[in-house]
Length: 112
Length: 114
Image (cartoon, rainbow over all chains, first blue to last red; front, top):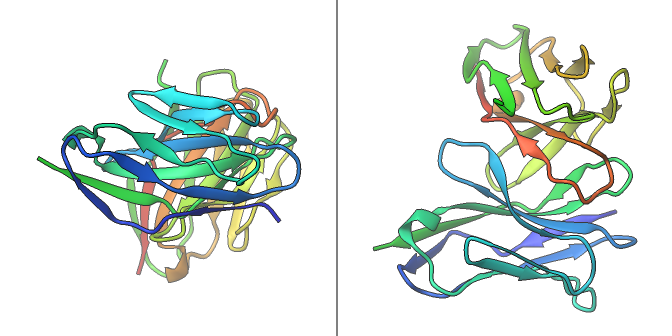
């Protein structure tokens, strides 16, 4: 069945460091891919998405490219801020039910 | 426009008690979902409702029931709570089940079963 695997956390970085959070998936067909972010004490909110191969999603300085050949959707940001501290979830969307399959989440802590 | 709202925010139950978690959305979305979030396991789908009048099981439905009361509301019921149901519960909704639409999440209900 479909599944998503994220790199283990927590990830601790200094402010202005470069961020990569790895995400790989297993799926039949060509699902959409998402990154959601969860700030402390809140629900999840969409960070970015890509709906087909080679698409790049971007938002708030974060980027991820849908790579079909490597079945990956790695999240990157060139210079993180303390306010980026949160839990990041990679997810795969089902085209006929709208269901999301989530990775286990990666906690990012950015220190000043 | 409140988006997705959930009540209550926190709840403590004793083993064997029952309760209903409420969820409502004001975005005229067709589909609604209940997830549970446990440490190290991401979010797992409990039940979903693709449209008003339909419900289907997700990955972890045992011990839960749902009701799609109308287009706006989707409730989750625990008939006899167990400690294994201690979790954070999120409701979400989506306009269309095309697989490309964004799911919008509520703020969550933190449930503890003693």
